[in-house]
Length: 320
Image 1 (cartoon, helix red, strand yellow):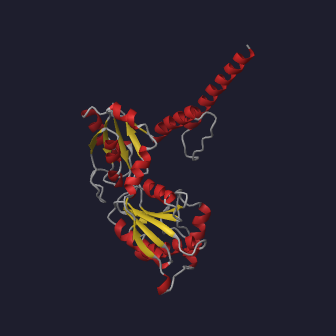
Image 2 (cartoon, rainbow, N blue to C red):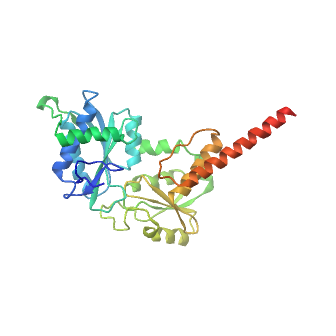
């Protein structure tokens, strides 16, 4: 949802709009002071992590966001350019009070946005978004005196920490032995800073396209739709790779291409994850957004039926 909508700022994924039309410097400053005021309601000096994507306007907007947060008394830890999931992860593990990501995710290059993250690494709730909006529209910003301002700090090795955490979640030995050849297409976005390096560290052979960060997105539009992934599909087939992976601008999406050059939507890859999880954690609950494919429910029911069958067979054996 665009920031200019009457009495409404937040959409489904933060505040987004076209630079200097919806997102003006003054608007972003006021919003940042509102965010800082929100976090400061529960603690005197909130510690906020700040990251941004590779859009041409992101460094400028990040400077404005940092200034607004500092003016509201926050201690701002600047992580620099990073994928949105990295900022979410680092916000949680470093015990910060919240985070802000400057990104418009998969939108065209003229867009940008502000995403607000809670201390648990998840986007803030709609209820908290309404509180920030109320502060913004009523101009109830907390602007500190000169001797009570916050400060800006930098964090080091954040992406290294993020990659290492991912490596801890996978079977490195199995992946390394598989000798996978992978084509990575980060869409000239910040996924370039993580995915190629991570895959190489896991022993994979990596081929990259559109891997130089460029906010004009010259390689393709940032949304990883099949129509935008023709180059990736061709690269996978020509190089005889095992798979391809495409990101959007801030790398919070991953769309996969199989060895035949066929794009698979996220519902299929997530269904595989669900099946793997339930196979290793029988009886656990699966929670998904309402927008999720029915395929997830089908997989979950299939695993429940399989579990019920195994339980019934076990009971029959005990009776014998």
